[in-house]
Length: 217
Image (tube, rainbow, N blue to C red; front, side):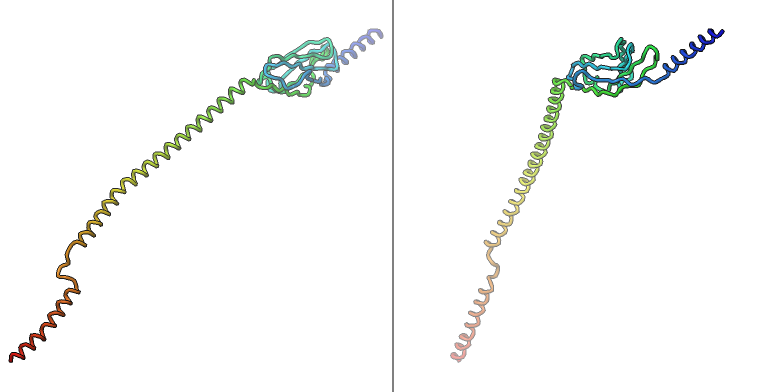
């Protein structure tokens, strides 16, 4: 009887210990890169996730993409994830976690690693060339528009000035004709000097006539 009681007690304690071990929080793993985190276009990089336990399952995730997930079973306490043919869309923040055979619960997430992927130089050069050509085309277009506007304004000014010149010349000619006619036309009745001279001569002749009349008498 006592033996059975002791065996049941040991079984209960062992089960309770297993439940407590399942519910305990696992320590966070560590995530590192075996090479530079700045990768060239279509390059490769290896990320290593390491835990404090062996015989665990590791998972690699991406913060910006909840559907990204890579799992790897390891008999040791670390796992390496090889990322190949990387493109700019693969850049972002990566993390890892793990779970043991006993807990079956994932640990907390590791510290984030930011992966950067450089763009293709050919694509960058082509994009820059297209932008340069577009800007040059717009500049030529606006210069041509401004030049045409200036030439049309100058032509209109010349036309206006040419149309005013004949009018002015006609006015000057008419004025000159009037002046010439007025100078060539003879004075009517003589000037004031001529009239004064005639009156003086007539007044001088009248006394001489009177003297002649008296002598005859």
